[in-house]
Image (cartoon, rainbow, N blue to C red; front, side):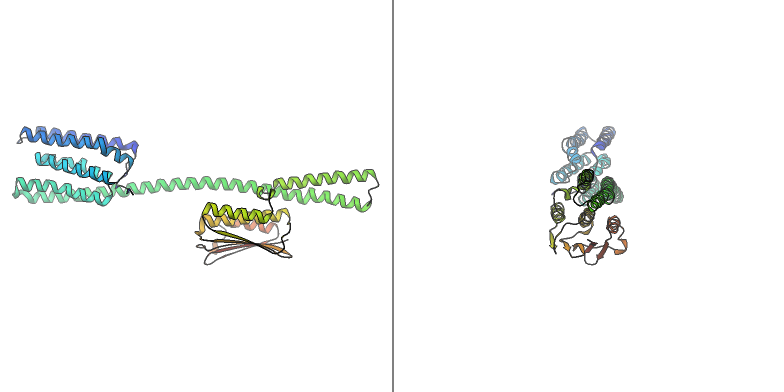
Length: 381
């Protein structure tokens, strides 16, 4: 697998490095032409080495930097550049100034440690060349090489760390933007669902119950409905009661429109396992019976919210869901074996909204978080 190279240069700014390399190469080539004391052959050899370095950078190094691939080919390119750099210095020592172009290339092509090793090697080359030409002047060359190595490594490390921090910040900003969009979507969905539930509850508590009362009162006054006007009133009330119930059903969660509560909970658990890759089990106990729509909505929403919290925060390996029917109540329990959380922060993770919905139907919410998390909702029904 390819490693992350020492310095990542984004493609839009890569041309700046190309211009920088070209400026250094041209300036050093001009210095080679103007310096005295070297034959035409040595000057030609040094300039040819510099030209080969430029061709190698354009033909191979440029593409590797753009691909951000710190692999074996990138290391081979660096070694070839180091060899050509050594040839130029052996021919004309003033070529040492190429160091300003060579060191950045090392840090752009390979990971930090190999880049540092290449920088050290590049600074040893002038020392060896001077040792071969004039052994007596090696002392000052060693000092210069040490300073050059230290400064090159420090600059390279600083640039590397700066780029890494910039990349981390960019990634964090992208994640924050994604989370904000997700939160906005969930908030909108929660608001829509809450309004639908409120309207369904209002219709149930006012219109539906009102029509039921009208039917009951008329039938109490005329059980046989011998009066046509009373019979018509009962038929009209029943039709409107049916319409009210249809509106309540339309405003209820889609998952409950085509399935029972227990089936809807099973589907939510199966979807959770598919999305999170975490096994889940659903157990139904007691005598299953139809519940008021408002109670079913609250229980389904609680199951959805609890499973969402597990997927996002728990890091769990297994989840168990229990839907228990008793004579006087129904209980939903969602238990995971994840990392848990501070129970004093139970107002977070969507639990506050869940608690409010449970209280609205006369229920209670209990949260335990120790060696995993257990969320229990119990509603009289």
